[in-house]
Length: 222
Figure (cartoon, rainbow, N blue to C red):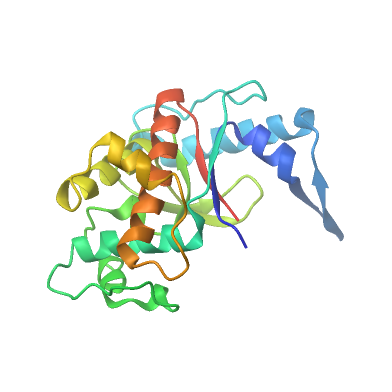
């Protein structure tokens, strides 16, 4: 199964994939009519803003229309997983980073340390399994329901972009041209962890910059 990253209005996203609405005593049905989807998203955004309150600098706001710019990228499961591990080992340099991406990467010891309760990770918006980043500047990640009622982790596109830049500065120190080149061709299945991490980094960095530039949400899609 592929893993993509989407930047754009949530109306466009849910109109394409189908917005799941659950009815009492009936199975959920899939709605693709923007006229029904947009009001639900705006109500969800308002409720989320109220929940976050003074923890965000201003109420959540972005262009929630089909006409808003939209972008897609494909870090892939392996690219994103390798990027996550690269970030985890960057903040735990005493641990030996694996040369290859392990199948059970979610049980990696460095990742476990970074996600341990009470640990203040400098790469939290990369490591904490976020699926939606909002166009607002805040430092924390949080658990909540997305538009369809599924519980996910959310973060900030601005903070994600800063943390990706920090990771590059601490490890690769690559310029924009080099990063763009990393994302042009997916690595082979037997590629080392670092090559996979670079590919995932390029895709996520490009998407985060697009989200910041256009003040739009960024969402993992799988």
